[in-house]
Image (cartoon, rainbow, N blue to C red):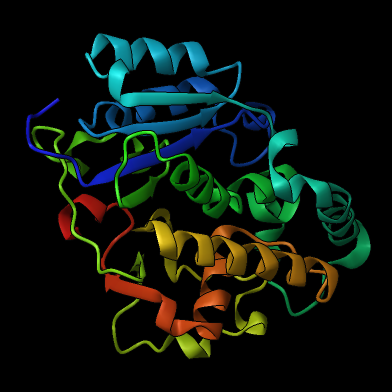
Length: 269
């Protein structure tokens, strides 16, 4: 570890939901491990939520890099996630849509996308706010700031990462920082549920989220109840990108949106 004091704890996670066996959008776990190597190489304090399929790999890599003392690994399953208490709703909505409930005004190509056919996928990707909040509550490395980075961030390409894998980001206080993919003139307010749901609209990158301890508590509460609202009142299940856009439109002052591309976190912050 560099002698300079770290100002961020990086949070990431990898749970095996059987994606290697999917008929469409299949990705074997080994592919995630290859891509995750770059994330694990970052010379920052790190908290990792993973399961029995990946925990040995994670510990081995951080140990080989001499970073294990700056690492906390939580061995969990999908059953440990708060949103999993609504698993029956996630599954029933997905099943209904897949078997006769697909509406005529939805994009038919979306029917094979992960968020439309895998309830477990939706539970896991919508748990990023929980992972951040959980990490900040524990805060073993005593940092004020936390950043979520997807395990497969950069898809294995080192060019998206700092040359020396050292990262000293700066985030505005009291805000959740994230990357907006569409141009600044493209108003987020136009992306309503009708515009987003079961349509291929990429607006926000869910691969990176960051904020300080106080903001993360507020963010997790708002995010969690937004997902529950969609489930119970709207009978909707979608990925984290859709949930984020809808939440930002409800509480814009909570967010710091910076325009960029999917894997620009280390360039922008």
